[in-house]
Length: 375
Image (cartoon, rainbow, N blue to C red):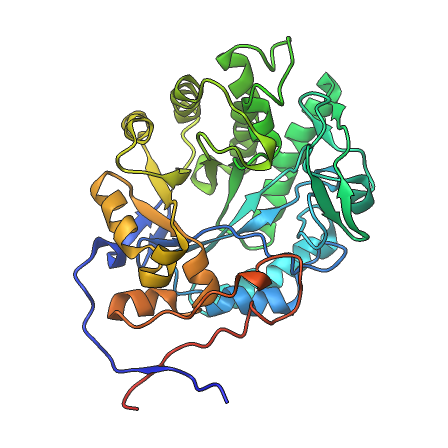
């Protein structure tokens, strides 16, 4: 029989991670952000259900929750059971999630994620759209199992305009669903990152070629979303140098300073950098160029996750100029992650076999919380 671990109350460690912070109009009780995590627990129609409401409510002690990548329109879907925010049913489902988190004292943003070429007709019912007709190089999960990636259709000017409008509508839908704001996903090999990257953006028009051309789509999506819901409700996620999902950016050191400067002119609420490293010169340059809140998401080994969930790395990033720290796997395995880090309590072991594509509560909502008091 599995016993629920117990811990006695302990004074908080002296750490800036547990200091309150302000993010636009939000007062965050700590500087720990639950990173957006793809978990494939929505319905087949992309509607979030009670399973998701319970999951996020369990983790409401995070300073901020950024909910998982969510499809702004039908063609943008990546995998099966990814949530959407483009139908009335999806909006209502998310409203139940934000209501549960709010009742537990939490705050949420929603990540808007368009898959681009990381999609399949067997999943979305549509031929994927992308900057150029460059096939996704790996098999993709679909409702019928793994299928070879397909060649996407290169986006026309009309497609680009419709996609910009779709992001703006999705942002308005998210606010209507009770989110405090949205995060535009320009990372990890999805559509916006595909426009940034030389091997997936072969365009010779104003949406490709030069650094200015390659950053244009991300900038225009953010512009459209800021116009729709206001700059205090908009963040942007980037992953400089990431080669996930077959991406080869090329010229990373030129690309991201230019992108940071262009985005700064639009004054979104925050920039969220994936795998931020305080010793990396590009991180330092982005920090210097970015005038607003910077959320840093450190790269962690499995050993670091098991040891302290990323606490030490987070503290180093705060010392190097980050304002908030986004952690993922620690929040997955520990519904009371903030309390465990604050008191030095042991962490639950992460069960990676339940991270994606499995469904159900196991490895999702069944991680135990600590029972405080005398054993």
